[in-house]
Image (cartoon, rainbow, N blue to C red):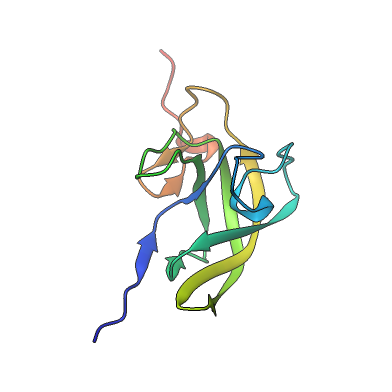
Length: 119
């Protein structure tokens, strides 16, 4: 018998008020920088805690949007409901990302001094 764990390089949530989803499984109505929000994901998931990760929208079946915001996971824990394992935690919005804005270089945010020259 093994332990099933999923490593997530991003936090993928559903559209605000998605039918048959709990509030914490979805985006809040408004994303505000420096605000803290709860999240809830089915499964035993592992998130990076020492820096920023992309916040993306999921439609399910691993269909993900481009990053909507950069977030920092403040902490999370695992628990069970019946036979199912769930992950719950808190995330902070570091920066909202504009459509087509490049903010991440691999897994690291691009800092202003690192942006490409505009010659």
